Image 1 (cartoon, rainbow, N blue to C red):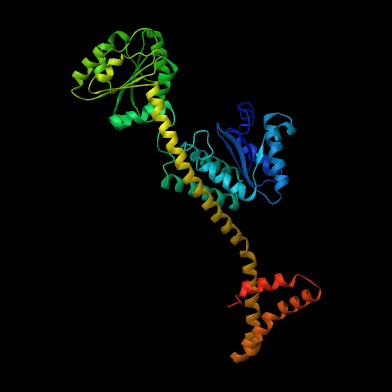
Image 2 (cartoon, rainbow, N blue to C red; image 1 turned 30 degrees about the vertical axis):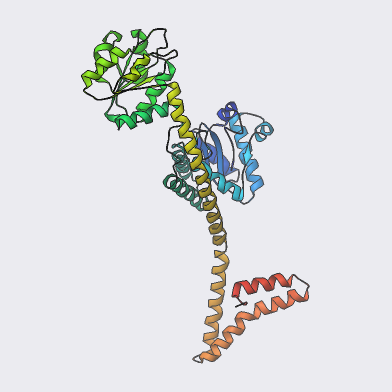
Length: 406
């Protein structure tokens, strides 16, 4: 594995190295022509990496580094100095860690596995996904699934916007059934609104003291616009109210919220005050059925979520280590298969010859079989011992293979 991530390289360099979906086939083809036949390229906002299988590792690393430099239009030596590489067991662990979202800017971020799946698909379509790489990627997906199933790595919000979505879920349930109103056009309010939309919210309206700004933001968010003068009458119709005006005057008063709650007949309202200074009168906190959170409240929820994910990450890394060890053992075992097949084939040939020579005499057939199976190994061992070879190691191997100690 060769690449750069948010820990090792600047955003400027990662942008220069970035390989989008349209460019991926050509990039992988260039690696294939240069001798790296099995490879995929993973490009996200956090990282740009090539995962590959090759016999000559040093040459493969240099090939990928040069391909990145060519992609970025930069000096190869300068690019190489900002890239990291992983080989063997370290590469196995790295890919498992990335796929399980343990190496992301936000630990447990749910989109990483999907990004690896997309990279896997592009490599398959480009013809650079051989048996070795495919088996490895499938193992990485299994690790990610186990981490999601056995730990709480994806639970708990880790940002203010995610915290707002979580509280909305806790209070009202499925966001797709809610009506939300964004009052003001500030950046934080827009961010929370976008997070609610991503979580399934279908009914969002925008209002602001200046209609032109509300109209522009409504087009951006592809939602409804509410005239600001209609706020008082319309407030009772919304389950979630986000404010981000940040002026010197209160925009949502306790009286306004109280009137809305009476019309809602005990259905609560979740209010997020993202304005600086605040837009919602603090007395709203004393109203039964009104749940007011400011940025400080949401930050506390997010901090709890981060702490929970860190604890889950420790358990998840234990799973990665366990699965990496199992994968490496399995891969090592598979490497012995050709020799085992050849040995069994050779033994079958000797057996057939012994049976043909002995006819129906079972005792003679077994005597011939044992003698012929042991003839070559016996002669080789004698020769090696006479030459002063490491006989003790050979003896130890024999005892292990045939359990002679027993």
